Length: 329
Image 1 (cartoon, rainbow, N blue to C red):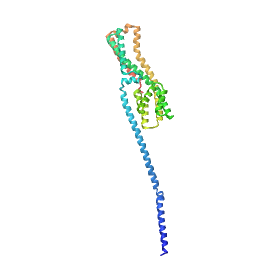
Image 2: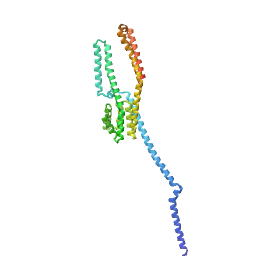
Image 3: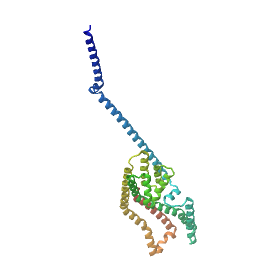
Image 4: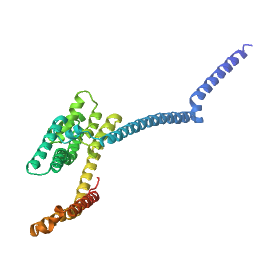
């Protein structure tokens, strides 16, 4: 019996050692041989990829939603821009008049336009017509002229202002400080418009919304592009300097295209001006050379009827030529 006891202990120790080695092999060696560890790594990598892809997809969805909201706001503002109030037109022309002052000035001008022909011997109907055209048409014509001239100056200097903002952002300045640099270094009307952006942001309006308001004061596609870029970048993020750099290139290309269109249409405009001015010039020459021959047009009923018909057809022709040679760009 004493001879078998050590043998049993040796067997027990050997059995326990074998079980221990088997357990260690199962824990550490079997996953390497069976490929479970590689499969787990692949599953974890796929799960991480899914998380990153989900985050990117949510970011893209959020950016797309911001773009859609901005474009929807632009469409609504474009519809409102077709119905511009008189006070807005005065502001867009760069004048400091109020609506009441403008109306009072128009009324005074209309009265002057009525009394001067009436004092010179014109009949009442002609004096009323001249006074109405002077009081109603002339101020609005001047207002439209000033508005277009101010818009042309704005378009001329806007690409340089965008380049200043791009250089400021690349140098590490915030967007707000870059806009301040534009206010300091650019001429009118760009200075006053960007100063209005700074003032709007200073009273609590978000910078993107303040830039979008630029289109209300300056209803131009270029101003609308600038407001859209700033609004989208401030809401959804992104490389603002790259976006503004692309915008500057687009603005310069549009300016070149506009100049090219004007150069190509100048011949047609000159021809239209000559054709439109030819009948009055011929009438004046005939009146100087033979007054009795041409005065029949306004001294006889048939002549006056012919003058009205000729003026109507000439007006229609001028409007058609104007529509043909003015390109909406």
